[in-house]
Length: 366
Image (tube, rainbow, N blue to C red):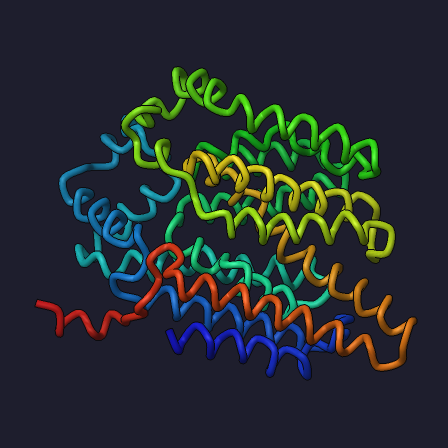
């Protein structure tokens, strides 16, 4: 558990002098911070042992690759993007411990590159990534998180109006997880402004979707993900704790309320609000049917990593205008809120990440 708190504290302690308080410094130290953060996240994920509910699943998949050749991979029902890379790795070692350094390199350096290029303040993005539990998601739903990072880059092409590049990247992401195909029409997010009418319409549609979610899932699973049976699948029968819905609901609510005060291009702000809403919506349905919350993963990175710095900067500006020095207090309050949420996730053993053990402890396990 200590390692999670150390990296959270360091994200702020190093981030504030290197990146600036709220506004990003134009300095090489920002790049250095992103490199250090990417390296730290990579090491935490790469060196873990038995951490995360999906750890043994991926270790088992890697073991099975010993009995599969490249031609057979093409006919496998799983997406082949990651499995081809794992099969290449399997040529050099059959030790499943090698899987997690490779996957970590596919997740955290690209993530911090995205944050460096597009975030208003990388340290706030890193703190939000941790505080909102995205690190713990990335240590479990690994294929989908790789796809989510590719989709995040794709959304930036949507902001620029490059629809062909957007569609190509989404298709590439689907090679890691088919759920990415759900985002094919989502480039329209950047063109739809949020106002009270938009809010009313989405609220009505969301309520209808929640009410009729069982019928919708029965219909969808007739064609895709047919292994998830409504009557027997654990992810169908059970819902997730309401905490996850609440925390993304707060993110969306703040983004919507501050939509006219957040700095940046209109398309980028539209994207952030839509992604935060989509994360909230799919977590809401996930409170009934856990499997649906997986779609929320595809929207986490823009909503959290780009949204949090803009929201906090807007809150800080509002507070500072009302009373000198209050901007710092607003920033501190936001960080405390993130740390409180982080504590709840850790204490509830979110996604099976506690206790944290390293691969060097594997020899001690009999």
